[in-house]
Length: 146
Image 1: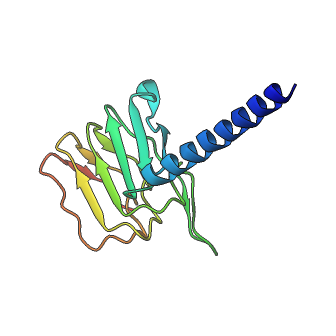
Image 2: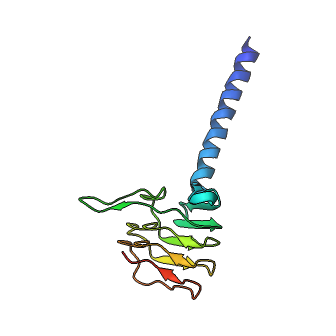
Image 3: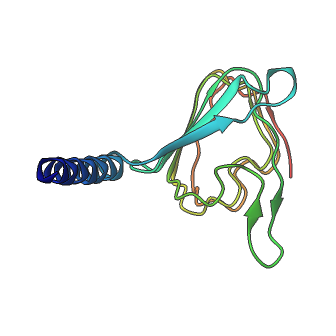
């Protein structure tokens, strides 16, 4: 009986150490979250991922990003799934359309990289963000007005 208790204690200690190690690894590498952000027939073609360690939001895939709602009455709110995350950098690669209000209200945003695949930027895409400068590639043919 004592042997079983000792074995149980070791097993419990091992389990606690393994869980602690897993939590520490997750904290060290940061949490990555993401999902779909496309629209129309290709709604699964455009993807987003957020790395909390680098504070980078990456939009990738192909086709068009979806459009998002953005509200500023009283407090800022957005329907974009990444809204509210601490984002300083956005990388857009592969998609052809940047959705309306996609990055609106991201007040910590300081850097955006837009690939040559983008041909159209929706209205208010960067409204009320922290951007002070942005380089639009020559491939962009349409920038919608607010």
